[in-house]
Image (cartoon, rainbow, N blue to C red):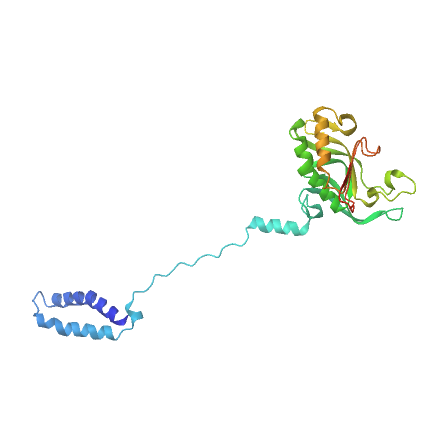
Length: 260
């Protein structure tokens, strides 16, 4: 590399130095032999320089400004999130609106739950009354609205706007029968729906519309899709106690979901 640099700079500098010497001689032509000492002196000068000194200096690169990790509006959102929970983040799930109410005790042994929430809406669908549920039941309700109810109703009446809640938490036995087991309502794991409210103000009423026309078809489809999302799905024709509403709960059965 050193020899190559000498050769390159000799060819570049030698003519320039020679031109300066000729100019200082006031136009007198120098003999051909007078260039040999000059070439030797240039070669000696180049031999004393290191390869780094022979190379032209590299242009200085402009300093890059550090990439911002978070914009000011992002910092504001983060600060607000640390101060108060976001709306619609109940049970850690976007779209479930309401509030935590903590432990709920009952007057009968077996009633209540360690952690309950009061739900006012799921996925933008408003409830006629705030329902006291467990987080598991609230999540199941939202899943049914999204993957079952809305597709079943479709564009009928402009789509789903709300749900009429017939029952939620209540410390009682099953179907209020004396001596029966504690109902899933008594554990905040059940909700009863009697009517679906549409965007245009019309309704799909379980008692009035079940088995009748387009509304009845939509109700039947919606009820069918709840099977599996909930552990228990009951409706008209199941046992005589649910002719005017859908009963959904998140109880676990050994044989799988119980749907009638």
